Length: 81
Image (cartoon, rainbow, N blue to C red; front, side, top):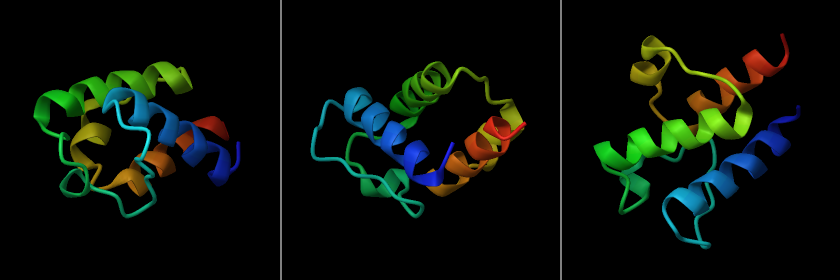
């Protein structure tokens, strides 16, 4: 799976979770960039991303993600195994 494919799918998940078709995420996107991204929505987002990519993040991965790029990197590493 290419980086572009991962971000295309992540964009769709973010748009669905936050109910905003205007959202476009990139490697540097953080919760500060999306108005409704609070701790509750973060949980919903993680669950939706896990469902989209058919994987489960462990607690260490979730707590060390600082931006969408970190999330994409984990997805990419898992997809290449």
